[in-house]
Amino acid sequence: MGLAASRCLSDHSIDHVVLERGEVANSWRHERWDSLRLLTPNWQSRLPGYQYDGPDPDGYMTMREVIEFISRFAARSGAPVRTHTAVTRVRRSDDGYDVATSNGDLRCRTVIIASGACNAPSVPALAAAIPASIQCFTPFSYRNPNDLPDGGVLVVGASATGVQLADEIVRSGRPVTLSVGEHVRLPRLYRGRDVLWWMEASGVWNQRYDEVDDLVRVRRLPSPQLIGTPERVTLDLNALSAVGVEIVGRLSAVRDGEALFSGGLRNQFALADLKMNRLLATFDEWARSHGRDAEVGAPERFEPTRAPESSRLKLDLRKTGIRSILWATGFKPDYKWLDVPVVDEKGHLRHDGGVVDAPGLYALGLPFLRRRKSTFLSGAEDDGRELVDHLVNYLAKPAAES
Ligand SMILES: Cc1cc2nc3c(=O)[nH]c(=O)nc-3n(C[C@H](O)[C@H](O)[C@H](O)COP(=O)(O)OP(=O)(O)OC[C@H]3O[C@@H](n4cnc5c(N)ncnc54)[C@H](O)[C@@H]3O)c2cc1C
Image 1 (cartoon, helix red, strand yellow):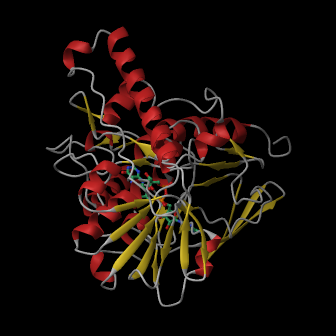
Image 2: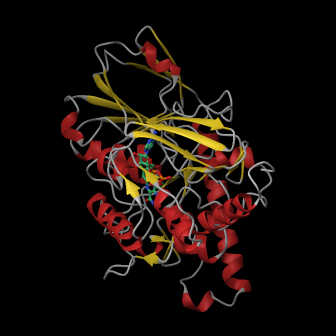
């Protein structure tokens, strides 16, 4: 997002610098597991004035390809990036901000925070009660199934990360139990097209933050159960049950070495199925009303999520052979370096569509920042341009007024 903002700033001839604690595309180089591919199709990989133009628009990039894609963009747009420069403190000054870095200090009138929404795994407090004999992993420490000890694995969380890793781990021959809370079910393909084609074409992907009813809630929605594979498979809970993953409810407590799971799986499944079907109906209505029915397949509905006959409510972690736990419970940003009072008690930045609650401070890349697509590569351009327009107007005012 920082590189996208840089492109937009350059288009306005605004003098700026991009500070990066590691290398270009750092998170893709160092904070992802080996098998990960983007869940967004290649045609949707675009940044300001730059877009995937390879031979496989419907494929999904590997991490190596993502790193190449972003590095090429940085080089082509001539972004003034200072790598290996960690921002250690940002503080308000009389006419802007004082920025301390591992490579010296800077002063500037405005700051765009593009440090990412996923700087650290978000692990629930109940993890503290897990017996010491069980090894815990997060998407930051897990690289591939060889990292895990032999024996059973409990994967907690069934959004994009949890379903992808449960699938990979069960295929490595380890028994997997998957703990499922609120989740967003989506098919990979719908009526012959990628579900993200439907999202984009129907306008859902571009939906704006000032158009939704409950912004707080949509900003916290989990990522959809999707995986990008050459075979373009759907990876939902039915697919995971079919390969032998045991599905249990939300992990609610750990007591005396026992993991306790909520009941009500059937309700969770019914809700996720209902929401998916509502979205598919939105797509159908869009295709009908825009005269697009002829270019896609017939409307489809998918088998409801199969609930286990009786789901397990308790798992004795030691006696049942669980040797490791993978916390696929989400990610959180890190603002420890931000010495401006704009972070609420839950660790979220206070902002209105990326205009942060302090003069001349902006943010990019947060969930539903200005649009549903804001945390995705394809969201960088529209958000970046609008925020940079705001920033340009801000800079046009004399410092004393702003
Ligand atoms: C597992 C996973 C899968 C994803 N899959 C997709 C996908 O399929 N498609 C898609 O479009 N998006 C995907 N995303 C979202 C993806 O993170 C964003 O598209 C994109 O990386 C966001 O860019 P960003 O610049 O906001 O954050 P990041 O890519 O995290 O970049 C932030 C940068 O800031 C640097 N930084 C942080 N703190 C400091 C500091 N104090 N000083 C200096 N530098 C700092 C970091 O080193 C990093 O390079 C995925 C995310 C995750 C976690």
